[in-house]
Image (cartoon, rainbow, N blue to C red; front, side, top):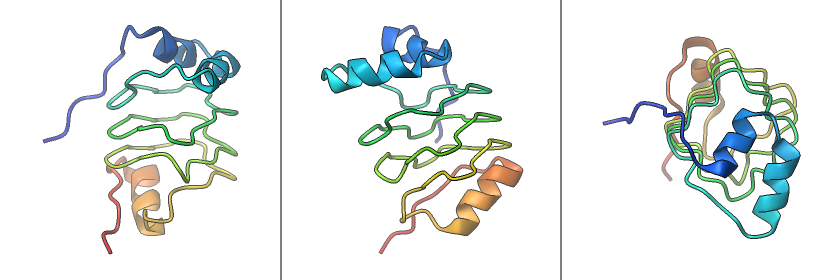
Length: 115
């Protein structure tokens, strides 16, 4: 069963919600982390996010600006990108293009291809 996306109180998550992507990246580089799974990022500009190693499973990226992000080393199982701006974004190779398109166009949750 999928969890509903949440607006969390964690300070690092709040940085992203407030558009302070550079500050988040600095904290991440210092080794600070937070649980971003099942987070609500609806309509947020996340350009510039250093996503390597982030677990973004179940996140809701409706109408987010994800342009140019390298998400190839982030975990996106069950995430939804309905209406997001994704030009130039790299997605994990394990997520087939049709999953990405279905999520972008219809809001389905992305699934990884096993094997």
